[in-house]
Image 1 (cartoon, rainbow over the protein chains, first blue to last red):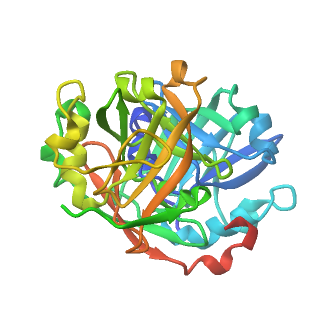
Image 2: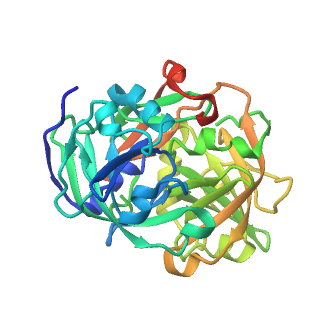
Length: 183
Length: 183
């Protein structure tokens, strides 16, 4: 599977890819051992600094110990691998190797980017206070890489019961109703 | 605009409508005065109890004081009203009246449901500890109402800059890759 050519992207605009609610892949590394998990529960929390709230269950040792990760946005072409990544544990296998994915070196974190994903956001743990109660990690996006085309990827959005919604048409036809400062 | 016939729905399954990341309308009432706001930043945090994390800015007095609200899922047919609701303040106008929306009485909360929305989830504030720092309200869904058809609504997902992604096809073709307990 092809990797995407990516360009630098403003971290304050990662909402364009996360706010519509796609399933993402979270990649991490601890003591040189890489891992990937599938994540569906996340939300934008702030533009500047660029904060993302993420639900990460307790078993993900790699991310918990390194306190750094990369949030990668896969397209529908990766859907079968996204599901199988969610089925497996990084304790047993190297998921990059098992699923034929390319680990690309990060610029600001030690966690690897997933080359086959459309966008990759390098993150550092910004607030650990909600982890114990809610498994909620507040991450700061410190560097963003986004593919140069198409303008918007065909992402997958989970509905439960094995059903994905695939992102549909993008339209600016409602733009005229917005007050500029609310866009 | 038509209101939707809705049936009772298990609160632990509201993820089916919120996890794909739609823009929602949050309705509330304080001392008999109703209000509606547009919200794009939310995430599922737990199934049982059914918890949803929501970013609600400080100005929303109605919800902040009543500590109850309804999360309503609009379809693309409501998009122009959703944008205009986001442009206006409940201090100045009655949004139900201004936008021709139907306030339907809740069963468990005093906040009104928006009749024209596909699904409505009655919520109570479950955790106020992250409000001050992050404007993050943890809500518990205490009652859910969902339209009887179609199976999935055509929802709108915000991309910034006045652009919406409209939800696309729903597919179970990747279901065979799931381990049953991971669905």
